[in-house]
Image (cartoon, rainbow, N blue to C red; front, side, top):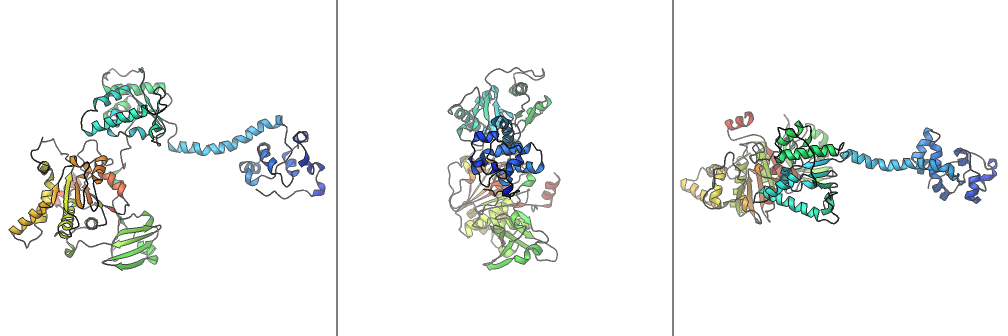
Length: 584
């Protein structure tokens, strides 16, 4: 409770009414109402807690009518600066309007944060009209629009019904969308006339409603657009809704670029479905390595602790660079005239990080299956591939950077020499660069043979690493290697569990996030999964660098103690391949 201010008058100079104010009834208080707020403050007793709470609005109203800066500040924070208030209550007729006026500012103060939060998010809610391809691309898209409403034209429902048959990904998504619509319609209190609440099925992030076209809409389109085409009917619905709900913003959401172009030509608001994109720009993808600043030792050297454990040296550092580090991220320091440092972040606690030096695979004594690394990033990748504590590795880079060769060399060493894994399983997305050549004969492995040309090429290189073995020795080694490598198709991965396997997923840039999740969740105890790909060579239709499953995995696994990623920068295949990657 705030302390009262110091008295401004001596007790012998106070009026008699100041001493008997506590004994007056409310009626007498009305008859002896003080003339000014200052007189009321001077006549107030030292302790009057109950009347203080009852009279606070009246005092704020009286003070605000003076329009003085100090009084206005007191009115904004009455609990801190207001003096004890009078026990004499003013007449009801005189206090009714000021009380309402005085009560308004606190209400406005309470409402202001909520309004500012809503304005900071997206302003007034919009009405989004979804195209069919959005629903078939992401069945959960209905719950990705936060507080905004969604409208589905009747032709969209008709197209969903036409695409629900089959075993393709599009057909499965269409069926899932139909089940979601049925669940929303079956929720308690659902009314199709007023729209279904999108959070009625447990999706708390969706605050809007789902509206359907329940009656014909009057619209007119240019005569050059055929009226019977589904896309043009959706454009007509958007035009009719824009006129009906003006000035509310009506936006068409479609994955079809040509449809968005036509909508803009007609003056309609349109946008692409962005929620499926992990990153807006491929350059923002986590690279897995960070160069330490040139003044790193000057800013961090005073508090560095180091110790030796086994063949590795550990450095405990703290400073301004630590907050930007992640677990299993590689850091390096290169400066002319100073010793270089190549390490991996092994532990982060608050503002302190522990760096662990790397094994140098550039040296011939540390060769893996006869293969030595040729640059810094390859050395980083080989440290991840040979670390038994790292269960998930992602490698990205341009063509010829050695992704497949290093993954196979590390796998063969750990399967045949270290006996850490029982076998190598290789799979890839069967997406052709050109036209499909048709059905392939044979078993599962024989059907996958033409897709595994990169595997055969790298096995041929690895088979020639032992120069001392003769022709028979190399043939026996080749047979042993092929007996430990199994080629599997992704189409039959559902429900499987890999125990103590070394799994290589090649050309992972052609996988969707859902397919990537299906493959990674096959891993059982003791299994290591290596995903490789070049995000600049995506052959799957409707996939981009931002929505690829490889991008999705890299972004979600960064900072996990048992996962690592590195982006390979330099090509080592040939000078022709390097130049072609740069200029073509």
